[in-house]
Image 1: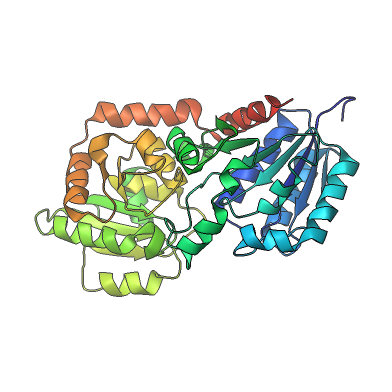
Image 2: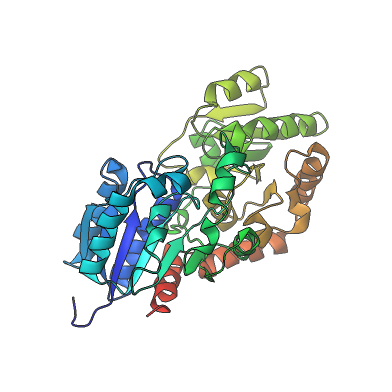
Length: 383
């Protein structure tokens, strides 16, 4: 660590491991690889997967500049209320910040409720508090239990951080609409592109996954969860299309709470294929002609970026980061069958030049390194 290095204190007191923490880990690497930061990370002791990931970063990139300790605060449901009854924990956090004297406090949030205890430091410390919040949706939008009630308790949280880092312009406007007052910085997601540089041919990829060759193949890749990902609706749309397009097939790749229900609904349809999740899904993109993503909410889905990186067009719900990426004709209203079928028709008839332009956009500026450099630059703006 060089003399005069800026110091950042990162807080993630969430016991669960989610997609936003995958990107946050890439961001942490950025601070060590492209910046000159000294980092203290306060993590939930029971989130072993997150701690293991950060510990690996400390060994690979830290070079003594990353310390990991236990967060005194804890995230739980109704945290917006709970935090007011956890004064001793917040005081412990305040003591750590006062002792460390960071230049910046970064709060890792899967939604505005998570890690919100840290916002109670505002006005008590001498540095800005910035939230990294890739998914700013309200609980009711996400279909959470007691979502409307939880949203009522969270109404004021959006205005508390000094700044918020978000992953798309559409989501940034969402934050403003919800009451965000701080600086909003857009740092778009990046994906590991190395695995797509030597893809198999379409024929080889279909052989690998035991899929038919001479068909137009739709796909959906991701966790099998109807409430968010909408595999049940994707199947409904596909079967309606297939009644008029006998050359089309559909493949689902993923595991999750609705895997059995999806397989049961697909049984009896020889043109529908359900595959379990694999740690190496990249070759499947080479097998696909198009993707469908009828999600309730997404942020900016990595599967969409991965599909576009492979020249695979995507029909998706008309919301979130999909609005920042996909042509209007490829988007459809949530759970609206008529507009969903229209979008699928547009995707099948998509002009090659449009698909190629989106592919080039991903490869030109949306690698993991692109995300990391932008993430580090966004935080350095606070110094």
